[in-house]
Length: 104
Image (tube, rainbow, N blue to C red; front, side):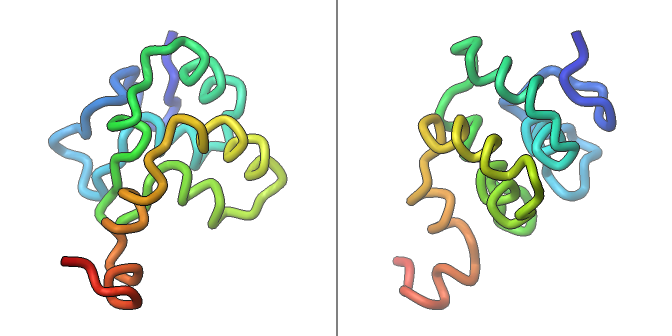
């Protein structure tokens, strides 16, 4: 089963070496609003907190992308990404967060 139409990958733990924006397959699933595939991945138990919390080059985790999208699927995506995401670490990796609160 291909979980990501655009990237043709099922590996959610790593970023492809040629992916200039450092998106994991989970980033692409969220971007595609593929609620069913993202839910299946989370429900499988194979998605670690580390994988769910990887930030892309913009500093966004898949959860942050879902929340920023504000599309019709954002609440559903966020509802099952929140329990498996390390929200504090995700925001601490974001440059604007560190500029506001000062990361050490």
